[in-house]
Length: 199
Image 1 (cartoon, rainbow, N blue to C red):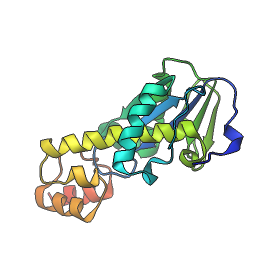
Image 2 (cartoon, helix red, strand yellow):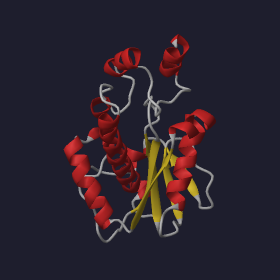
Image 3 (cartoon, one colour):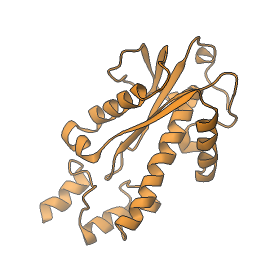
Image 4 (cartoon, one colour):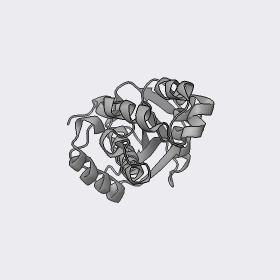
């Protein structure tokens, strides 16, 4: 994986930030912020969606071991319903940056928008494929959220959370229609609202 040369030689502590879980009907949106160690590079970083589940898990552990620091944060489903997913995602990103043990000199965020933080920030389209630190953030956020969804399979059996991770697949929609909504479903999302309107 070759990253964008524009961002390879930035000075200071550069934090990469990404989110996972804007699209699912259930659970939190999870974000991560990572400051990598230039002296301790990690091979194989890429957009988390392009990696296998096994590769993501291996890389997540390596990132946690080798990074100068990292932080995982979230906005819960209640906050998503109250604020909307856009503002809840920015809030979760802000929490991730503020959770870093080292103050970043600059923050690079995947996407079009920066959270409300006190540090210089740049939003980068497809940043998880262009910037190593954002790629690292996408990986540990993805592994963290997927692990939560797998655990939710035991709490709420029959919904298939371990398979679809809360996304609105055919299996998930059918389970919603058959079993109803759970306490962790996002009530502001249309497929969930449709079920609520039938009750």
